[in-house]
Amino acid sequence: MPEAIRSALAIAGKDLRLEFRTRTALLSAFVFAVLTLLVFNFSRDQSLISTTDLAPSALWITVAFGAVVAMNRAFIIEREQGAFDALLLAPVPRGAIYWGKFLANLAFVGLVEALTLPLFVLFFNVPLGRALPGLLATLVLATIGFVAVGTILSAMVVRTRFAELMLPVLILPFMVPPLIGAVQVTARLLGGRPLTEVLGWLRLLVTYDVVFVTLCTLAFTAVVDE
Amino acid sequence: MTPLPAAAPIIRYGRLLTVLGLLGMAVVYLLALRYTPVEARQGMAQKIFYVHAPAAWGALIAFVLVGVASILYLWLHDPRLDLFAEASAEVGLAFSAVMLTTGPIWGKPIWGTWWTWDARLTLTLFLFLLFLGYLTLRAAVREPVERARFSAVLGIMALVLVPFIHLSVYLFRTLHPQPILLKPSRPSLPPQMLRTLLTSMGVYTLLYLGFVTLRYGIGLRRAARLREVDDA
Image (cartoon, rainbow over the protein chains, first blue to last red):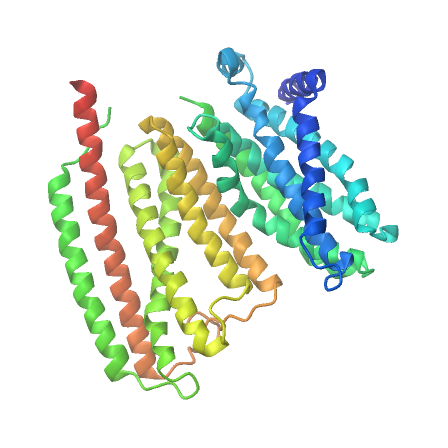
């Protein structure tokens, strides 16, 4: 289905172009992530809890919150002047619209993460070293999972009252399995443990991604079709 | 528009089942306090098990049926399935609230703490929050068909989420007593305890049916009134 892929890429490209022209959402999501990291640093007694103990949870809560803030925007930008109805009228399969939004969200959240990670290393004085490839893989796997879920949920909540409040309430339970996995993997990798020790968790992350990307692609039709 | 069945007989039927279920509850209490032996190490605190485990069972049935009704709704687009899912979610919320309150009451004397961040507890709390999220979403969408579609999608997604929750339980270290009924070897309970537990599970299933039928009937009545208002 190269036609559908082209449509998906076109939609994703449109969203990202729109974003880079203003950069408001990207900037505020990034600043929000930085602030979350800062708050974490002051939320503990430094003589009792070492930075290495706090680091995995600080990273993942920052990533999770940043992602929730960032994902709301995907469909909110379509609300103005009935833009989404126009998108639905386009001769494009529903799955391609979902994938377009999914890829744009993925790029957006990924960018926020890429900007946050160096600051995390700096603030928490984390010895990344050999843990970096494993950590990056975990970031990618966990992000794919909750962005897949977040994209379809944000398509629904944008049609409700209190959209901005609804998304966190709905998505956080879905973030729990990837987050538990990601925190476990991160803690072990930063502790210098080998990658083989966390294979079970990585397998869980991969399964979650495959299952939810498939399910959300199929279910998206039911969300948008009148 | 699909015609809806009359609400009144369903409400009556639901009331009957609920009353039978509540009578069954009285029997369960009697059995638990009079018939079953006192557990050697946990003492009287163990009695709460006859409420806690069946409530968890009821919550699980409710949850699975919300998911099944959601799948069927997206396939058949029958508004009755949506009303059933709504009823089942509300009853599931109530049952998981029972599970989440009886658990700590038992946990305090036995574990020495009301709450522990044990995997199963945490994830049960998320089950409760999923029900809550589902009902919040329903409350936030006004248009009935759109509400039905959105909540069906969420119901299916939540159903798929549960195996992942279960998997994380096994990967995460857990304090919770291991399953004693559904395990490969024979159930490790004295016969009186087993009989009482099974009775209680039967009663909770009956209560589930009663509550859901009643709530479904009320949902039907409300939907019918809304249609009347729209027609007028």
